[in-house]
Amino acid sequence: MSDSYELNPGDLPRLSEGEPWNRLRPLHWGWLRVTDQIEVTSVDLPVRGLPLEFDGLVVCQVSDFHVDSEADLQRLQKALRKINDQSPDLVFLTGDYFSGPKSMGRYIGAVRQALAELNPTLGVFAIAGNHDHSSSFWTIAREFSRSDVCVLANENYSLELQGSRVFIVGVDDLWSRRAQPSRAFQGIEPDDCTILLAHNPDTAPYVHHLKPGVMLSGHTHGGLLRIPVYGSLVRSYLQIGRKFYCGLNRYKDFYIYTNRGLAAFPLSFRINCPPEVSVFKLTSLDGCGIENGLRSADASVRVDSGCPSARATNRWPR
Image (cartoon, rainbow, N blue to C red; front, side, top):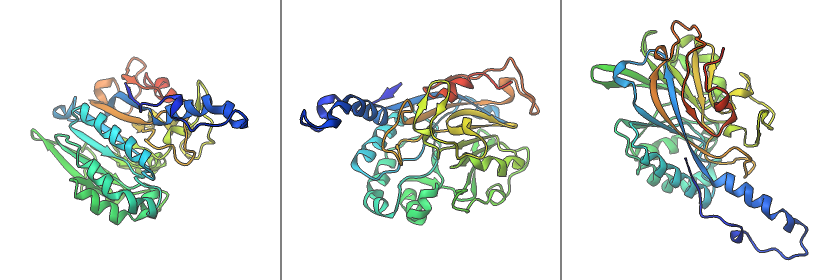
């Protein structure tokens, strides 16, 4: 599913016939359509140790708003309406809400009001991205809390349901050198089920020993420029590999889902990589056919996504 602006070629600025870039108008229009289209991605999300009471819960994730203009704000508002349409139990926000202090100062109030419209049954949780610390994450956290968003900075939250519990763990940003995984997992036992929020997928090697149930990330914007089979044209800056740019991928004995984000920062356009709202149905990792960290060739998970990486991982890796 997708939601897009009412955009047509006539909306573009009029250029005279003599201007050489006039012939690039169709390409420009195509870029705008991909950049402003919002794709809703449906995924069965495998979580290690998930209690039966949490099986089937609907969770939405959105990331990398980079609200620096009115167009960015409108895109966020559309995404949040798409989230409410899913009637989620939980909503996760995984960082980079603004690109810098100037845009944060201008749009923080409008973003706070937009987030206040979210209505999940169990709560909204947020973490910081690298741009949030350069913008003033203290201000962002304060304003988000006014909209009943629980901000986790190297902290965890115990979510109880019918006598069982899952810990929502928020690890602070890796690039900003504020990530403290041991502190974030403080008080959590090895057998406890955790859903880890970490903006940067490269956080994975630093949390693996803490046995996360699953990890949700953003940061990469999906690679922005993607071609079939090859994937992103952007040179990989992830230490754990380019396949973690987007979608559902296995890292050792747990899974990472990387959301493509909403903004096209820093390029201002996307190719074959639309902005994304992720909609997860929680399911037990053991229930998918994997136990004790062993891979099963017969296990499968449903992924409905436009991301080549997600389609490539429609079956558990062999």
